[in-house]
Length: 342
Image 1 (cartoon, rainbow, N blue to C red):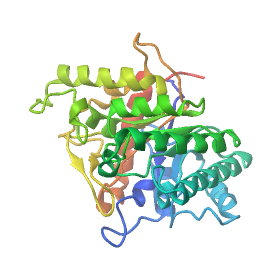
Image 2 (cartoon, rainbow, N blue to C red):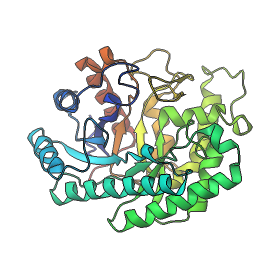
Image 3 (cartoon, helix red, strand yellow):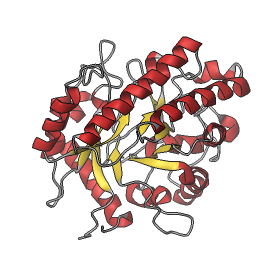
């Protein structure tokens, strides 16, 4: 058995909220997700921590006691916090002046929340995750102009984050304007041009980059591609990862079946499949290596933890403890293959 202890292994809390609610399934309480994460175990290995979606009703950023209560819960369960999702959707990086100001303010609040957790000794690493909070169709009305506006907003958010010692990671998902293809994402990151911005790769979402959803001009795999052709899939993944790996500062392990899926108010994006899904097109442990190793096969060690994202799993799946044991097992295999001892 591997003795690697890095990267640390995290679960995520936002799948209990995203795609849930009045127009879908009930939100899964934070304490339920915390308990199932803490209970998961594979051959003596347990989760090291949680990445947190700073979203209502799990968290209220204006509550001064929120981080103290959270820190106590984490410590009680021998877990730490890692990356945090800023709730920027009340604004938009591409919107009016007021909307953009709200976007930046939500980044500030997330940074303040993260700093408090660091000060309380329960957040040793991690970034603040953002997206453009703008739809692809709206962006497409003026691609060049809208990308410029988003970059300006991201620069302002980066400057705010730098004051808290935080890095911002842009989510690679096909439903966010200016971020919906691998080439658009690289262009945006280069345009932002700040030392504390990078990319958050998700094995499910970024696989859809290869298929050109919402950006057919940047398709790599042909429209009629056989997704069971591993050599074709690997070649496509290599193109995407070679472009985005140098920017990658946060990483989600996940599975995808080559389809899109939306739930509740969430737009369609790369479908997250269960770790054991027989229809999954990714070899999770192998394909994670495209992100965790450079073009020479050397470990990048660009981040200290990895996280599983099972966003928009049905509640009956998420309330099953075996789901989290299977997920932890998948993460352990990734660490065995691409981790290190420190």
